[in-house]
Image (cartoon, rainbow, N blue to C red; front, side):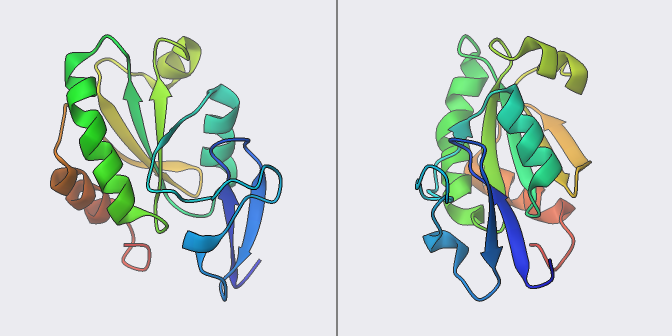
Length: 149
């Protein structure tokens, strides 16, 4: 797998091999043909969440939120702005804790919004509370190995 990345499509959960020689920003999913990176974090279900964490070779930043949460709604535009800056080096996704209660419970979510950063299937860090875009970007980059930042 040297010289390529595995990128999970946030829309259909298809796993895509992207050669290092190809620009990830321009890549499309081989299954649903959607752009793999759009600068827009997709809401994902439990299956897509698990596949993103378990199969993707790029770091994954998850925003755990709920529609009724005021701070979550306030942070949503900042998370989207952070996606435009961090992608394709980092995948940004959103997990609705109301719709995916079992996943949120398994993650030990006690308050929202909570962001969790994963790489290689393991958690690199988590933080709770709303942040602006520059804080999200800085927090994420501070937790990544230098080659990924």
